[in-house]
Structure formats: structure tokens, C-alpha cells
Amino acid sequence: MDREITKAQFVLMICTEAYNRRVMGQETPGKGHGVAWEGHLIYNHIYGAGSRNTKFIPVVFRRNARYTHPNSSPRRNKILFERS
Image (cartoon, rainbow, N blue to C red; front, side, top):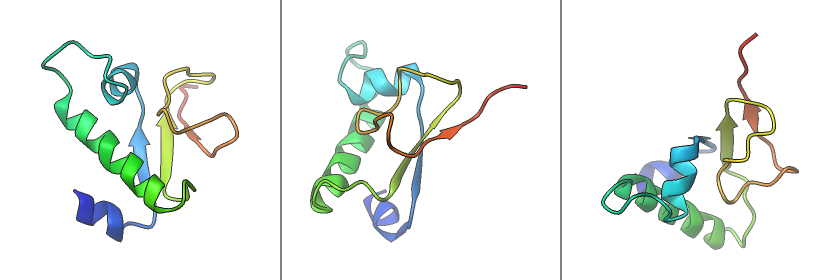
């Protein structure tokens, strides 16, 4: 997975409540180890880029979602999917 992240120009992060809990280590014990590992890789890539996030793009499914990836902020780019 780390090689693929390195090779990619952009990485879309599908952000849900469960994803956020797991990245933040707030999930039920024994659940979400894969997402926790993924979050660790993402943090390392951002750290290695001098704390500039130019690669990881959160994808959220409703406006004003509070469960975006911890590294995202209201000023960062996001992709929003909404039902019409």
C-alpha cells in the first residue's frame, strides 16, 4: 500500500464516521486495524512532505460533515457527494 501511495499523484480518502473513529483510535478494541494502519501511512507521507498535504483528498457524503479525515480542515479541498 505504501508503494501505491508513493506512486500516486492524488489519493482519495472515503471519509465516514467509522473511518474517522478508526483513524483516531476511538473504535471498539479489535476493530479497524487496517484503517489505523492506513492513517499511520497517511500521517507519515504528510510529515515527509514538510506537513504540506498536496496528495490526500477527503471524500465526504454530506455537506458540513464533521467526520472528515483528521488532517482535513474547512479550508482544504474536499469532494462532496450529495443525493439530489
